[in-house]
Each structure stands twice: as structure tokens, then as C-alpha cells.
Length: 344
Image (tube, rainbow, N blue to C red; front, side, top):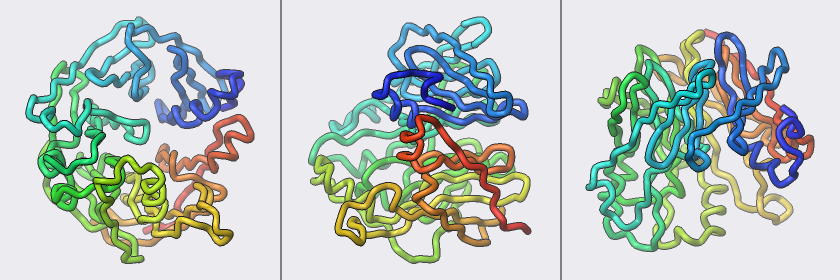
């Protein structure tokens, strides 16, 4: 998808690069981005670009998902708007957080960032919830981590429910740099949670925790917490996020009945030249497990060619975005199709 198809403003290039998604609908893959109240959809097979003007009367959404061919979900701070692209009809699903989840002064409203993908399966939306810490205090922090971490909304209803728990290390009052985590659909309609700071995957059925499984790298490096008193020191947070190992996206391959989990190992903050390590110098890999969570293998990727900031699993194939600066240089969004070579 060329940037010039969407905008000629260079200032929008990075925005386009980070605020887009791939989606699989009816045996086709669409790359789409939201910009200036217009949804841009491009079928990667036909190369046709569609421009659809969106009118909701709201500010720009924090997240969006084309969950069916003509139905778009727009995420705002207090609601999910379901938008029919053919009729322009809307359905609003309001979020009502209980008062006890708003008490702690460190929390602003529930957020879902672009790094938090909205998931849709079994006619339900699963929206990761994060609570933003703004101040340099640990007062009430343990209680804060005990809050539920996922909001579920049924497409056929107007209400929402909260469920899910943070891993135990979080509930001890520790801070791990951010609250990013990912969800995928697993075997037998299970919901799988992958947290950055936990080497386990957490398994839910409906909204009940039914177990967890260790899905970890072999390097044995542990994720350590970050001092809450230094959460406004963005230089140190950058160093922490570069150096400390962490887990990222999780996917389930229904065809091979395998789980894929993205992992960034421990690495030094400075490169061999003594300069701050850039994203293209941060190694990463994909861990592969069978449906019983037995380790199959690990696949390393060249960070100079591939970025783990945008990975999708569509049509039994991984789509991994090229290194971000390369996309900006070429003024387009480029993905590589990657098939993992581990077979049963």
C-alpha cells in the first residue's frame, strides 16, 4: 500500500505506517488504515483501493477493526461503535466501568492502544484494557493490578463485561514498563492471553480461567520489574524496554495445531559502536509449541529486515512487516509472507 494513495503529506507517513491493520475476509486480505474520517481498504489480491467516508460525530477512534466485510468496529474511550459501511447505520455499545475501578488516582480511563489488537471471534469483541499510571507513587498500586484486564462485548447485545486477571508478578505491585498484552483464539474456543512479563500463556473459556501453560524461550532470562518511582523518566524506560526480555504477540495455527509466540530476548542498550541500539538492531524470534504446549522450536528473524511491531497470522501464513525505516524510505507498507517450516 503506497502512502501516496492515501496522503501526500510527509508528516502523515509514520502515522499511516503505525495506524493500519491487515484483515482476512472471505478469502481475501485487506490492508486498511483510518485517516481523516476516511477508511482506506486495499485488497492485496486485486490491488483495488476503496475509500469510505466515515461519519460518527466522535473524535478519531483509538482503535478500529473491520470484523466483517461491511461492518466496522470503532473503539472510543467510553464506547464501541459498530458501523455498517453499506447503510451508514451505527450501533453503540457503551462501556460502564464500576466505580471501584476508578478510585486510584494513578488511573485514567481504560485504553486500548494500537499495540492492543481488538480481537473478534465467536461473535464477541475482546478489548484489552490498560490503566495508565501518571504519578510517582506506589499508593494503591497493588489494588490497581488486581483490576480485570479485558472487556468483552457481544455483537448481538449492548452490554459489556469485564474479566481476566494480571499474572501474579503484576499483582505484587510491580511495574513492567507498560501494560501491553495480546489475545488469540485457541483450541476448543479457548481464549489465550500472552503478557509481556510472564513466560506462561493464560487459558480462558468464556470468562473463566481454566489454566496456564509455560510457553517460554530457552534462554532463561527473567523479566524484571521497573521502579514505579521512575515511570516519568522516559530515557530509562526506553533503556528498560530495549534491554529487558519480553513476550509479544501470540497466534494459533489451526491447520498445524500449533501456537506461535513472539519473543524479544535480553540485549544491551548500546550497540557495538557505543550508540543506542535502534529497533533494527533488536533481535527477536518466534517460539513454536504444539497444541499441548510442548516446545517444537524457535525461529530467529533478522531485525534489519523484519519488524515484530506488526505481525498477522492470516490464511495459515504469517505476514511480517518489513523493518519500519525501510517502509518510510519507500513510502509504502510492505509485508513479507512467511511460512514456518516446522511440521508435525
